[in-house]
Length: 407
Image (tube, rainbow, N blue to C red; front, side, top):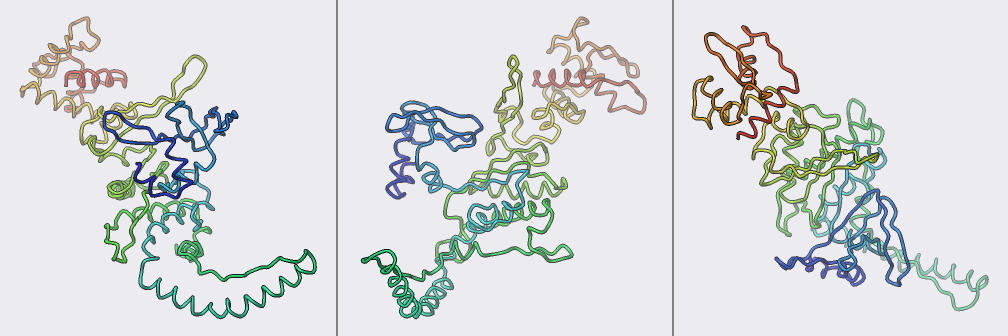
């Protein structure tokens, strides 16, 4: 982290250096940032008390351990990395804004980072300089003389002006772009529906994910500044198959940038891998009369490549027979048994299921009698044509929990 800060200009560097934490075990350095609706009290450098506002980007002070919002912190942090934030309820103006603050504008600016180094841009720069040379040598002096004369009469002696025609930066050129979309009628994107606007923003991210890193001499767009993608409910407006396509692109993008998603859809992370990914479960809990947000890291609660059924249970507490059946198959393998009755005995013995146990459920199928509820549910679904028994969601949940504990 320190080497990145050292590369910044003086004022930005000075602001950030005072907030560096040092991990004594690894000697690594890091910053602690936070953005939330909470407010934090802290003392300014001159000792005056101050309070942050809801939504402020705050930074933790390693000496006082308080969160602060010192002057210049926003500009300093933005110099370190860029954040592309696509909210579920983003306004259309934000979506299609090609300025640096807009979602599409940020993405296109990153895709065009090598533009200023290209031969075409340098030729354009040279042609522009030649074309505007006359403006700076003739028109600008005339304008300066006229302004100076009026100022001399109205304001006082000793005031002079100088007009200089500047060459536009790559950022200025990009911000003048517009995006036309033809969905039967060609118009600018801001005239389309919100769903299409958001889909275009996500499509640009997918396009960026498809790009391969290139050498500085190549004209292939390269992201030169670290970028963090924060995407709220990427599944909105998308069919499950389209969610899979977006999921694959975001996985590619995560190899070169940090990608953070909030989602309710199992299709977005059903290729989750607990070595590569981190899964955080957010929920609300009642503490007295107050509701607080609970944050639970369930990264290691899922298998390395979980099924949608497993995700639905672990992340959303939705029990399905598909997940139960997967667990029952794993118990069959673990028990080294092949006959269902033998697996039933294995579950009864290892889970200590006796007639007084809540999962004791004596059923008969053919000439065989079984003693556990997991086996009864298994037989119900595997032989539905000859068994009409129904089991509750609570019973299915209890059986899933039992099999997980045995595994």
